[in-house]
Image (cartoon, rainbow, N blue to C red; front, side, top):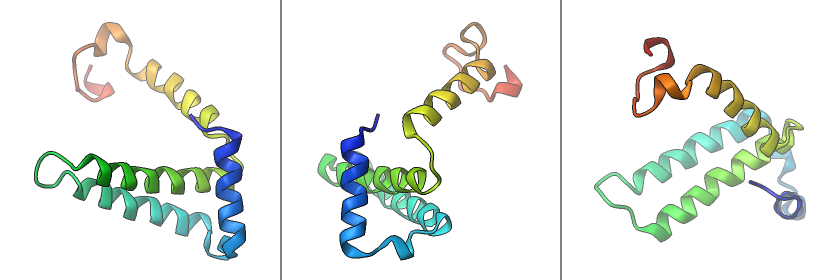
Amino acid sequence: MTEKLVRDALRDFVAERNWQQFHSAENLAKSISIEAGELLECFQWGDADVDSAKHELADVLTYCLLLADHLGLEPNAIVLEKLALTREKYPVEKARGRSDKYDRL
């Protein structure tokens, strides 16, 4: 998902502006939610303008990567770990083609 190049580019961007002081875990988590709302707004009245959605999605991903970095987490590792847990909750033989929550399968 992410490469060292992206992480380093984000770190450099933040450091050049001295924004680390504003990047507490809480502030980054809030920013993810705010940007996710802006992404959702792209779809509010039907089909989204792809360019607008692309830029908002980039903002969401940026804050997610910054938060993972702040917490010392590797994005690829945590996604794969969560995917393994979700596989257990939603076995193919029970979940295929269904949107029910795992406790209703």
